[in-house]
Length: 164
Image (cartoon, rainbow, N blue to C red; front, side, top):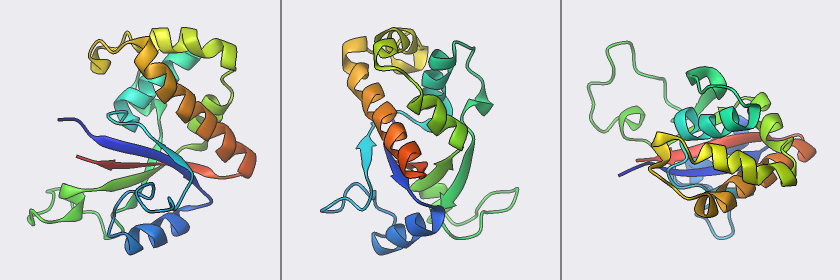
C-alpha cells in the first residue's frame, strides 16, 4: 500500500499547523469546506514521485535533492538519532506535512500547457509509477501545476500532507 498525499497551498507554516491542530492531523482537504486550496495526488510522494515530475520538467536525472522539504507537522520535537521508542509517536505513525521549496512551486508553475503532455509521457516512464498510463497521470500533473500557479500568484507556499 502506498502513501496518501494531498498537495495544498497556504500562506505559511503557522496557518498550516493551526489547521492541523484543529483536525488532529487530518488532511486539510478533508474538511467541509476544505481548509486550503489543494489537490489529491494519491501515491505522489514529494521525495520520489513528485521529484520525478520535477526531473521530467527540467529534463534532468532524478536525485533526492530535487524537492527540498521542511517538515511542519508533527509539531512536536523530532526524535533523536536513535529514533522514537514510542510506537505511537506521530513522527513514526504520521501524518506528516512538509513545506516544499519555493523553487519546486516555481518550476511547476512555469510549465506551459502545451508542454505538459510530453512532460507526463517522460514522467510515467519512472519505475515507481508502476506502469501508469499518461492518460491517468495527466490530470494529476495538471492539478499540481495549476495549484502551483495559484500559489505563486498569491505569494503562497506549496505543502504536502502525507499519510501511510
